[in-house]
Image 1: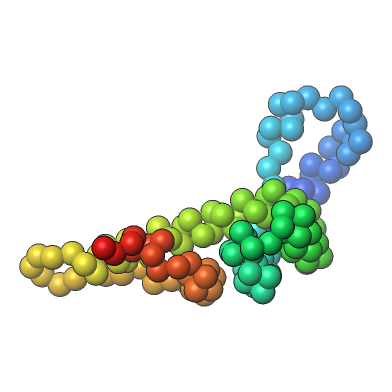
Image 2: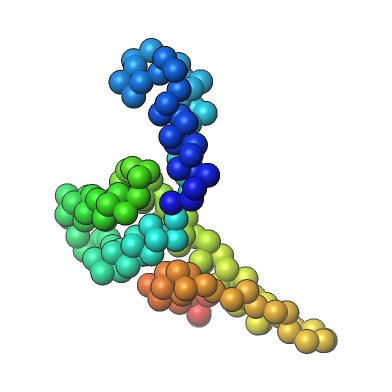
Length: 147
């Protein structure tokens, strides 16, 4: 975990007059709290687990089974970090990761297909996580259906 993030969480936990069970916290204080970004380790665990359970093929599993799998993934992520993640946060992170990867793949494809003079536009390299995510994204989603 990022040391600055850990310090911030420890400072929030040690504020005078505020305990974790204090029911009198104002909504303003709730809004100001923000969890740290997912670490590289958390992201890697998430991507590997989603790929292992093939959660990208969600229509073939009953909802109860998908939720149980997401809970297992969250438990694995929470076992390596002090910041406790929820199923909703992990699902959102997976969705955002897929979206960013698709956008980058689409920009690369668009740059490769551009016409005109000069050298072709440089393509953005996919990092290790993005390559893993790209492996589960069908080509039609990026390129569109040819016809």
